[in-house]
Length: 263
Image (cartoon, rainbow, N blue to C red; front, side, top):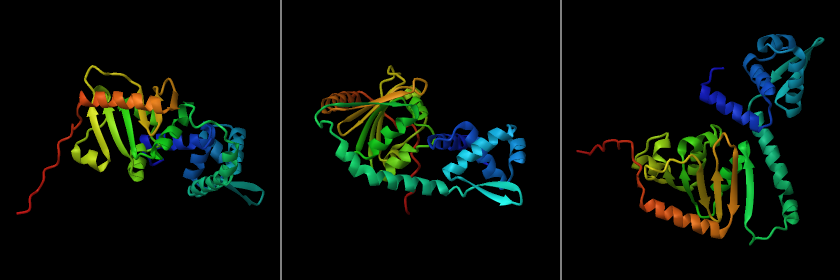
């Protein structure tokens, strides 16, 4: 494939989120790369048994991402246009939208009781999506950037989505675990205020909060994350954040580009 390792990783993460197992991904990408083919040549290219290829192709046909045609007595297989994923998502979204009123009828939980939700590994993207829908338009975070990026993965593009949604970010970051460089211009463009925590703070987990929700992120290796919807928890973390903000340093590690004055 004519893609970078980072792009390959992103493809893998997204296809996994669609429910593709590793073999199905391998077969699908091979079909996408090699075009229309039969089972035996595809089996030889991949180095896996014909029966395994057939099983994967059957699942991919059921998902609607592979097409089959007949040429005399042979079955020819071909990957559908990748835009088919957009259609699948649209159909899924329409289906969910149709049953939302019915689900609301079934909902009986109290609005005053704190709600604790636990998210394992790939479901963490649900937390990020919820933060982008915040009513206040501001997300606060205390973050170990390197570990946090591993939790998010390459597929989600949180910063890009946050900027598009017009959500401001106020960020306290572990200096020793930072992965990027910023200056005031970049912070402004990316709707971010950020400071480095004191140097003796070197933790690997992260916290973010918005509205009445506080989210806790462990490391990728631990793979468990949770949120609590509670006004009192939010108040406590807001006060802790404000205190840490006052003792934290600027986060402008990239030199500002020179300003050219008009003569």
